[in-house]
Image (cartoon, one colour):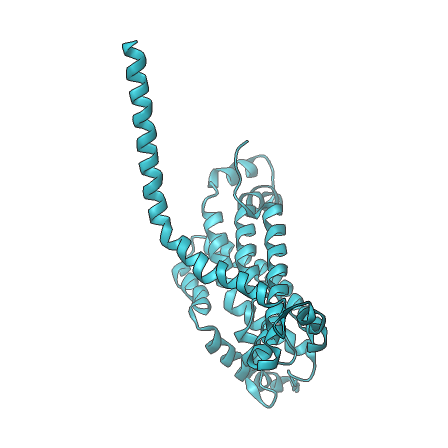
Length: 293
């Protein structure tokens, strides 16, 4: 009986300690929770509600009238630039990360240079590229004129989308490179040595060792950058203005007009749904944390 009572006291004490620990963890996380609820969750819910309000009544007028506000071109342009920039960033970031992991003379200088674009303000980098790809003159044409070529970079929608995509790739590739560099750093060199002894060439080592090891981090990088890509705003606004339109420039242009605020809300909800679907797909394909069953 005495042993049973002692065990009961120990268990109750253990539960009390666990509760105190959980309470401390919760208090530490409370500022982040308040931040997310007040500055992310509540505004999102409020925008979703307001998107269904037109002339003081609950209706779908903001959604049915949105196609007339250039919705489909904006949606297509956003998808093209987002997917294209993500693929380019992922390929170049992987190449850069694999160079950074090599112990060569000047590695630190190379790594520093690689990171610099990510530290530059988005508006500043957009202005720089607007000067590079200026319709009249510009640094790009100053170089191409050596070969007898002059390009009007703003003559077609395709070329303007290419400018935005290239500018976004230059600005944000360093972030993905740093994430992938962390994954490559965790791979033991002995795995490559053992694979070499077994006769595996560079391509097979990359396919069967490198890619599986960094796949979760690639998913995280795609999730982080993908959400930002769909929310692209400052780059296209500075580089090409409101035409060709993107989802966020469409939202902003309608929000500036008192009569079209409802269209801005409904477009925001559509963009939110697209981002949520994208995030769910990336997480389902391996971007989320793995738990042992």
